[in-house]
Length: 355
Image 1 (tube, rainbow, N blue to C red):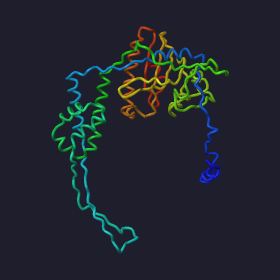
Image 2 (cartoon, rainbow, N blue to C red):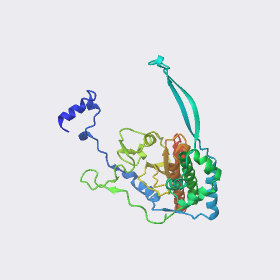
Image 3 (cartoon, one colour):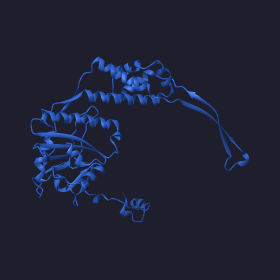
Image 4 (spheres, rainbow, N blue to C red):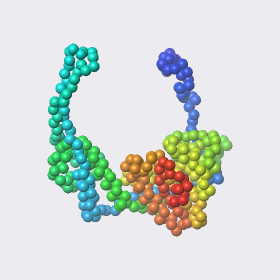
């Protein structure tokens, strides 16, 4: 901008404007995420073990299973209380003797009537089909199963509330059905593209292995001090993370002898019916039984798992199926794959003991 415009803008702020304005020429560039040479092989082994180009398969529902699914949805929908929309008439009177004073206007309720909406059933079915990403034919089956009393009375109370409630019920039941009938295949196939890169610059980092900046977290912090798991952290100079909760895990977790390496995972992109899923942390654990344990952890800062949004929780549950398939694949190879949820204050030691 022209200098006079810069000065005009700066004059709007405090006199110490330079304290608050981030200048482009001083913006700190993020560093490459170099991997410690001592941890590289183990980290690559872990990554290659879990990074499979697997796909999910949904077993076809039998007529009996579909009928039961529709019945479950019907029962839950009809249990919902759709509240009436009430139209109120309020009479307001102005007391000219009190203009400008408290109480100049008095109001009283003179009438309340229930407002019944006219329901466009075809449009409602289309909207539910779009919201739940299910065929119209499936929504029609659900609609046909509903009682006439619900359709002619409860739905008319508040079609918009009914639409939201019904969409949520259908989605919850579909996710539960998918969890019960999905399996992962393709574990024996090829792995996904390699994420490890070699520095070819002419500087001191030439030949070192690194990950793309931002590949393990949106934010980056230089390692400037000690923390308990620092020697086992797989990256050399930085911590990349996606939330304060993740940063707290990295910097505040205690060291445990059985941990060999510890790091944030690159984007794993496990395919699920709700979209790709990416777990957070990984640990290589020494087992007392002599086998190798690769522990993958999903870290959530919620107070309890019930606070996790439905779709997010659904992805985690589908991921459990993926890691179960990996565990089955490696059961004869002296490798154990374990996937755990870490909610809020769950202790690291508890996760490792149950891995």
